[in-house]
Picture 1: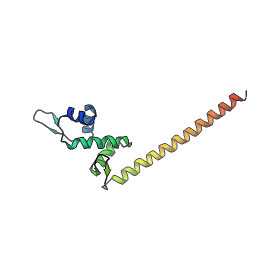
Picture 2 (picture 1 turned 90 degrees about the vertical axis):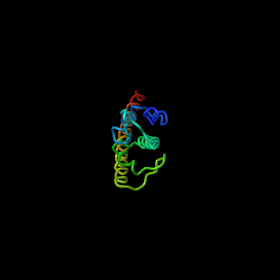
Picture 3 (picture 1 turned 120 degrees about the vertical axis):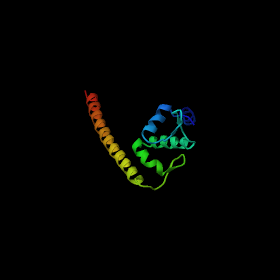
Picture 4 (picture 1 turned 180 degrees about the vertical axis):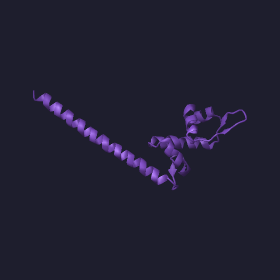
Length: 121
């Protein structure tokens, strides 16, 4: 199928499909005319990519995980790099959450101090 067909079937813009190809996530063949030709399996691959992106994974991480993926959910099966990649991503998210929580507490303390000072005048 051509890139326009894949775009219509997945709801993903053609420029994103080309980006996924450039990142090594999709591997179309090329016809004699130079046009990209995607297999029917590409639809599932794009669905998997989108869901893994929604989970906060980078395209580099997804490239490592796609061989471990099956189904539209996708289900991930043990393979090299899988656990290390997911654990590293989770650790990064935990660190960001901790930093944001600290920032939130600090801003709330400033707001409370200003609010209290305003009411006491």
